[in-house]
Length: 409
Image (cartoon, rainbow, N blue to C red; front, side, top):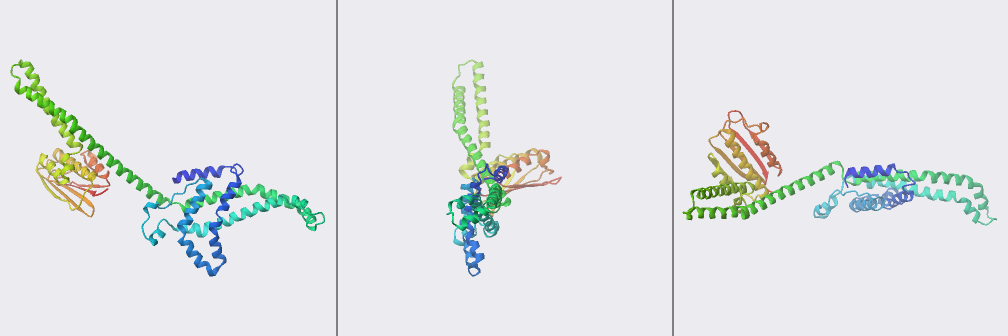
């Protein structure tokens, strides 16, 4: 349960009148916290066994925490999130003992919990005293007439009844207040703190972003396959039929032949445009032969000479390969449009689980992302897989674009 939801639930609980919140439920919740505090009480009352009991309590911190979370969930409807999911716990006895335990939990079980349990014991005792005080006249009436205790109780029935009534009036508020205090202490000390919550949220955001990037890449692959196997094949068949008609039909009027020729040329142009579109969605060579071959194709189609140096020492995730491919493609396009360069050097390396792309040109320099030269889009593309992009482009050149991407997501 998020921290905001917990705070709202606690605020609603604190704003309720104690009688409407059923003080018996508050007392039951408090009484359920007394047994887990018994070992600490025994350690305080028995100095000889204190070290042993405290050591066992420290070893049992995770079960004690799970017990308290269960008490909060069952009796109060509050879900306190654990510090670590069970499937993330490491193997081994000592790591499992240390994992999912914080000093805040130690403080709760060794200090806050026992003190709150003492307050709970006082509330339970006060309930018994209040009930006994308000009913003392009934107990005196049930005793034999000749009993001296009956006479003494009759003398004390008024003050005891008044005291019991006062306790009955005060105890609901005291039980509700102590229950709210224990809820807040448990939520703050047993659950993850702000740093852990933010870290968990960041992990969730990173996982969801990686899933979104994979989903987008998979959708691009599907569209590429559909266009390649569907629309492109139909256009190719149409162009072949028009070409065949253009070559075989000799006795048609010139106007009709002109229409056939124009339709044939339009079909071929549409095939070329569709091929470029399919290559822009997801090049087949990238999936069939890998990043090295795909970058070689980009370098061959570039409008200026590109010296390519690729050394890949480890496997790269398909999504990262696609990001690297389109980053290089867009970078070369920007160089051709803006840099007025005569050549480009492209270096691709893998080291330490990172893919490093370096694109250098001998152009005029002065590249600035703020001026809309396409560098902003490159930076966003790299950031989509937790990558980085840096640009060094002084006026007069040269320009160097360095991109670092993780080899695996």
